[in-house]
Image 1 (tube, rainbow over the protein chains, first blue to last red):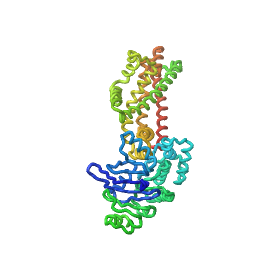
Image 2: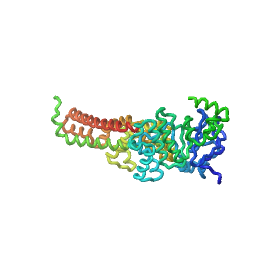
Image 3: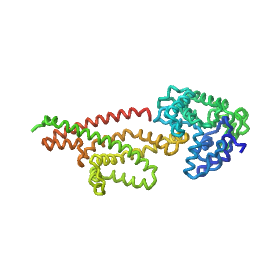
Image 4: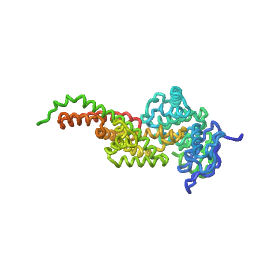
Length: 253
Length: 218
């Protein structure tokens, strides 16, 4: 398989009962590439993202990370073990942060590396400090998440995901729940990751951010990829009527 | 004949000893009811039916019958099948399991109330279902029901007086013995009530402190 990309989605389809939310989606993301998925609510963009790490498993189709098929058909127990293993390579950031409120920032970041990678307490602490320095929150290491602002919470969530040294990062509307003035600090962290050539797949409503950071943009509607291409083409010169309609509404704001 | 509390100081040591045993049995049974409550709740929600059914039957039995009878069963009944427990152990087991069932009901209701995002956050890091339950869900579910579980602990402290019937020399029984020697029931029962009240105040202060401490972590 010499043509294998870093993240590959082949003929992905998903339905909830009669409702088809994803239809025959193909996507290849190269190492270090940054792909934005845009589209109206209910277009299936979050579902597609969540299919990559098996949070919402596909009905049919394949998801690959390098040479490992993520959604292999396996007996239940083996499937669990396989999924737990591959998820360690896929960082995910959620709209509502999903930080663990009963743990400090340090505890949030060190939990998985300690439990899953067997890091010693000292190594895990060092790792937490490194990751927090990256998102500019070193001084918050012993705080509980309830003491942080939304932007700080999301930066900690990014640090938590990065602490597992993932090969790819998924962002599911990472700034949608934030107050307007807090969006930029999270965007800055994401830009910095982009400069470090982290492979990223970003579901977003922020067209400016997608245009400035991403290598490729996918426009999805009603479960299909309507159009994809470099941001310059998608945002300035889209071919499809549906893309134009969507962008007219979202860029004029 | 009026009240005469001058006899009480003579039995001060005995009452203090009794109070000590009351505290000891409350702490031991309290811990058992706490951890037992978590175990029962997890089995009730996630256990294999072969485990779930006996636990449910057991819970039904413990909620539907008097604690006094349960203590008799454990202390006197189990001897017949060759299990001869010391009175203190029988008291701890009876009280502990009885309140474990009530704590379990609370935790069973609070586990499903933990935000779905918490499961997703943990699972996407690579934690298994079991690890997520143990490290993420249960700690949050338990924190959410600390206040009502605290009320169960206070009830447990007061119900610990029942273990006097199987001969544990706790506060209530200490008072009764003093009464049988002095024929001063009112004085000693009041003295015992006062001691229970003091222990209760300490327990409540401890619970309030705990609630404040976990407030930031919820």
